[in-house]
Image (cartoon, rainbow, N blue to C red):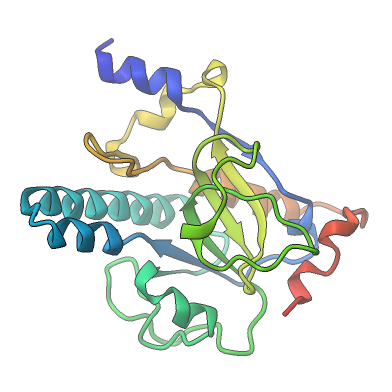
Length: 233
């Protein structure tokens, strides 16, 4: 086992941890996947004249995006998936989807099944989860999320409702439960050698959880902190 694989073995595992049982209340009719452009990082490096690093960041950003798209394209089938760049986040929050949401091949998505009145969709991105409750002010900018909130540890797939409230997360955790299956196909994960930029595949776990909850009979027992989360404006 080479040094890189040892580092991966020690640092990564895909595990599931859910903020609440809200999947049981509302299941998505569509999922919007946010892709990172690294726009701010590129701007800063360009301003400093560090053009070689700009090229590296652009390559890594593309690698991360391609891995995430491939993961969802091949491992998620519960409902339609659309993609958008994080530079269009404000428009997505305003539910202006036309010309913004994309297919897996980067072409503009047509005949969307969601519109400005839709509520039953999830927005997902890869990053850090936050601790969030009814009493907290809504946090709609992933760059402002707290990264030291205690749990979960590390980055993962963050799942939000249409109002951009976090409802669940899938994240990297303890290496004791590590499975080499995660790394059998490099098209589904990406790790930058130079920057804190990565993607690890969680689409299958996300899909399976939704399918399981769809086919399950639920008893309504939700933490009051998360009551009517999907209906909050």
